[in-house]
Amino acid sequence: MPQKTAKPKKIPMRTSLASGEQFPKRELLRIAYTKEGEISIDPTGKAHGRGAYIAVTKEEAALAKKKKVFNKAFGAAIPESFYEELIDYVAREVGRRELSQKVYSADLAPDYD
Image 1: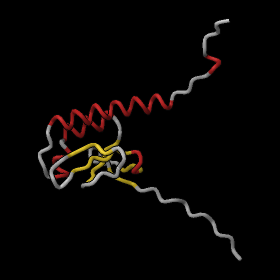
Image 2: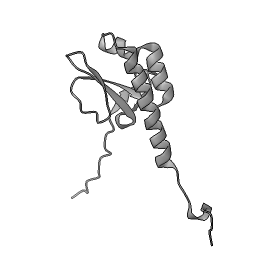
Image 3: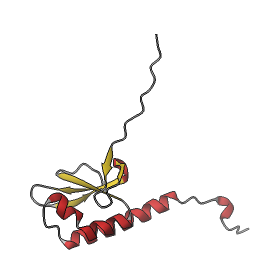
Image 4: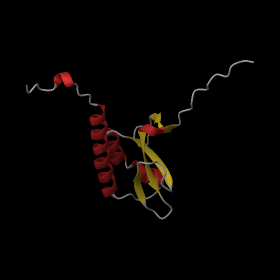
């Protein structure tokens, strides 16, 4: 009987609205737009409504504001304040990711003996 080999797990890809590049879905930030006309940042990716994605970089957030990509994607007038909120959120996330990747070595710690 032939042995079954494990199929590689398919990684869902999405396109960033700001740059047009494709990324794995987990690396992107979802923006949700409901039928009631409410727009929100959806870090879980599970909020109700139509979704659009951007990469979590400061450049992408600034480009999204400049191009007003969500106005086009959702066919609605998105307030300028939402784009400002998005830029602030992305800046915090970028900072968190940078901190989580820092490696501190005990060898570099000062010796107080």
